[in-house]
Image 1 (spheres, helix red, strand yellow):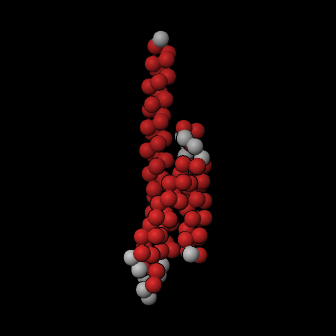
Image 2 (cartoon, one colour):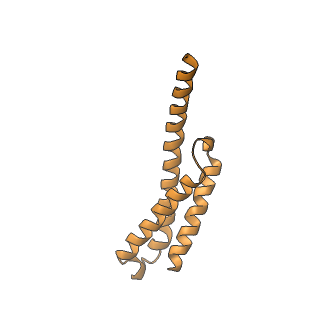
Length: 100
């Protein structure tokens, strides 16, 4: 369980760092990348532990490292998708309002 707590804390921190470094972070909330990173990281930890990777010699690093990498990648993917999509929708709505 200690590895799950470590994964949760680090993935949330990575999510906040990703949010802070995004230039379009005003388009979505601060908790979105952190929540996505924590969800993916913890879910992958559960899957890896259920698969037995935490108890095999030589493979105990998988539930510690891979969830962190997967959570960070999911956070970055969510930020890229949401930032572009929300910016495009906001621009379209602003253009429609200005045409009136």
